[in-house]
Length: 458
Image (cartoon, rainbow, N blue to C red; front, top):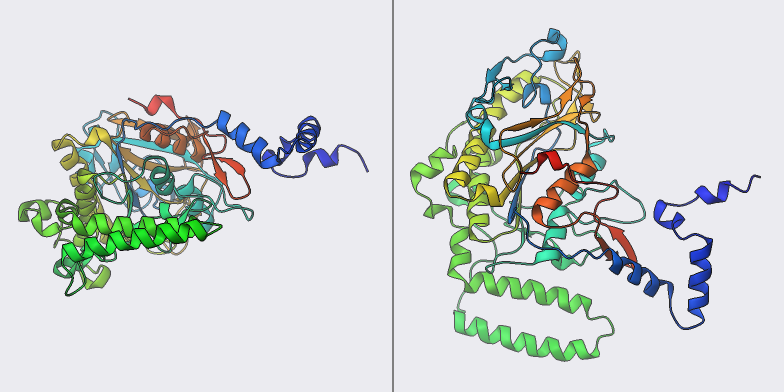
């Protein structure tokens, strides 16, 4: 057996621990210095300080299932019919830039958007690709990575009494949306209720228990802290208590703050604003049998209220886009409410002077096949797809990258997912090469090998 084989075994991080480093660690062990302390020291060298960037907040809009670029942000009217699909196109304010005919509202505000038309992935599986999109890391059996929202929470914490990371209505069931190797205290606060429920929408944990006023609640909070402080002195591992403390502190700040409660209260929005977002419109089927306008527009309106009040990262979902069959019918049903809501969200934030400090990120796991299949749909395709963004330090009116004649791959300016995530992190103020400590004193980069796409940055 050749001696070179052993040099390629293990992940890149493992291979970095070469023979000289191993001997160094061995000698240090004799002095009482562990491998963990060596790794912590080396990680500290890459412990870039996070400072708030241009994007003070992020609104992540997840389109689960994967949307087709050909029917959305990158139509190809010159391609043969079986490639270009069933829809036409509409012109935008930007010369030479067109969008799907199903996106007339976005066409009107394309000069406020930043669309990457040459995103490159390599995972055609829903769960694994979603994990990659939500975390910025490829799936691993060895470790679970934190979501971008959890990393933002870890680096900056809450603001104005609002949870830093909020799921609308929640992030349950979204692969990679958890805290990974970080503490559970950096997880998302699930709203619980859904604006799609219309007048029945309620947020959990924002009301005092029956028979308890704010003074009694505050006294209970003080007693709980005293008891926990005593238990913490006796516990060998205080982490679970600290996590529970963070939950209680968050609940207390939310219940005791009128401003926080108001941020979740959509009834405070004027009727004309709710209508502008499409709530109550597009009356085709939606969650709870309500309108798709309430599902898309209600969630996005709540997200706007939350970032306006100080939330750092809000994640919401809309519809299902896994269109292996009948893409024409599905998109005609679901697209209008989405187009209406996101165009309104972008314009509303801009009108309020918040767009430049709020990054809107439409996230989906991959695109769809270049050619329409026999069932009048498109299958999974990760080799190239489009990603829509806006605000937060990105260029306005930029449509970046091109695809080939059949939308099978990038023709120029390919953007790997790791580079897209590094760009997003740079807007937020986090160096994607920063290393966070996983269990076992294992330093892990937030994004492996990614680098920001400077051409996208304003």
